[in-house]
Length: 355
Image (cartoon, rainbow, N blue to C red; front, side):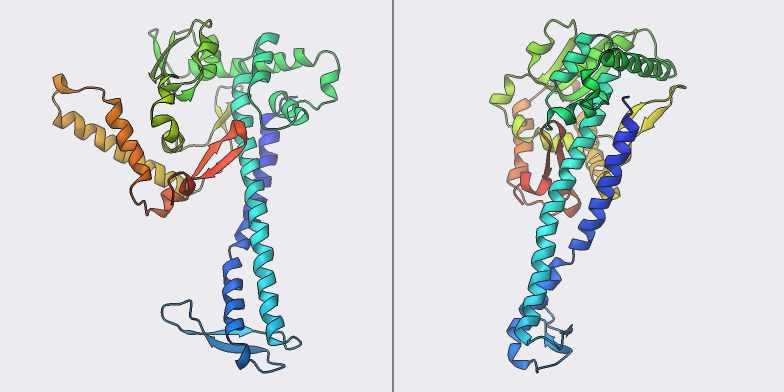
């Protein structure tokens, strides 16, 4: 039970197949153009012709193109045939895109929940993991969260099995941490937008005290009695009046690591990475953006004396809100996907910035 690699491998294989099918749909537009060109030149096509040469008025150069025809069909029927191919691929692309988004969101969710589950020690922990928001039905939730089928959940002892597997994974985590050679002082834990679940479970594994530094902490009341030290840059109350909450998805997509998600750790403490689902272009794009952020910060440090440095959240929000007001032409940035695995959403960056 709880074989995360097996589940994720299946999903990665599924996503790969969908992406191959999507690639075949990329040629849909050429069929529409071909149909339009045939429709505009019906009068020039002789009965029984197997091809026709026409001017491509969609091209700036207006060069001629040769179009293959079915000699058994009329000119209008040939045009309709190309329209049908276009519509079929367009419909398939829409459906495949939805399926890919759903599979990718499920893959990310599995990795998130598996990470929390590996640190579970009691039935109370299992109940907490079970309370985490999930976009699928109950049967899928059991499979994803606990690695068991719905039928197995009805029998006795399945909770003990989950906790036993979690204990094994927890030992592997500790071996990895021991190999880092950390000192005895406090350890800063950075989380971007979160309640504090990851920190809560990590604190059980680390012997050092963890100090949480969050960009934005959501629903802090859930962690009020957990004894955690969390210092958010933005509070849950700020999100109601700040532009940050409207745009943090963009930041979260950019401020990410270039390596794949860590699913778990081997017995020796070595990390087990998941399959990388982002493209090389995606990784180069956000790494380039991160370099720009570092350059901005270093320039600020050089130009502004220490006694004049202040935190100006309002100015930060104005800068971030500019993403809606300036023209962004970088296709690699606009092609990024913004993931929200808990709700099963996958949003194009282009839609968020209004391009």
